[in-house]
Image (tube, rainbow, N blue to C red):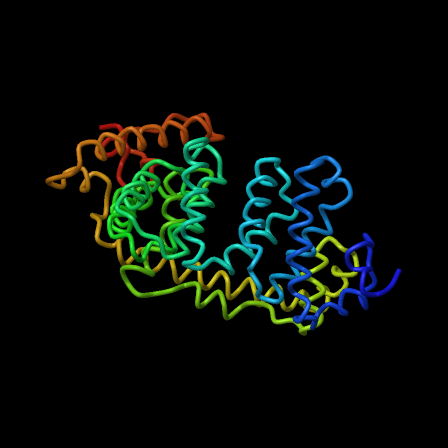
Length: 352
């Protein structure tokens, strides 16, 4: 097998055959034609595609991304939707990278049509509809209808599914304002209950929406700080990783050069520092402006009745859970510190 074709035909191509394609920009049209041919194979026999062609297709898309050529955008989008619906997640990250990097205003009409079709079929019960909307927004598209829909998403959908989409709301005034309102709404649950994603369901909103809030309302972009801690690899090494993927044993050896214990420790420290910065900024913006105690908060005038009722129920449930999970069987006395963490006596706090 010649070195030119080995990359597309051998499950374990030599590193030399991969690097052969690193600087063949003049042949990018052939790469796009290959992506088109994979679609014919997929449409003709999906099972055969997954068995014999899937990995080579992913490599080809990775190569198109490397050349920054996105002429096959619509075909790659088609594959992204179909592979996601088929639960073939092993290569969709490559397709997401290609689509996110290549989307422009010229894709708007196509993406609007595709998104409407997906939304009519799934609404937001499947992630593909949200990802299609995400790409549509990245293309610069705006409509009042989408702005209203984003408000509904922020109010009702899992914030983890919205972590990408909320970072691109610059041209959506209602959605940005709703994001701010959502954080004000959950702030008391964070201040007076605390916890993490597993013990406090409101923490998810707090974490996923914080960076977007700081970006829009404080002109602070934490993504810039994350960019500073990216691991920079040699050009050839990065190309091999992009084309072969992290599961190739040879790639694991390459990565070992960069992911030393010392480097991982440094990375963890910087990452922790960024999280700490985010939490301190959010504390100043929201938590420090709330009364010191839950009881004082309850007495505030003009509280949203629905929020107040939800907060009371939430506090009662959390105290009950704390008591039921406490290893000690001793009953909390009226004069003991309240387990909700308010530092007040139980009789003057959650017993009331």
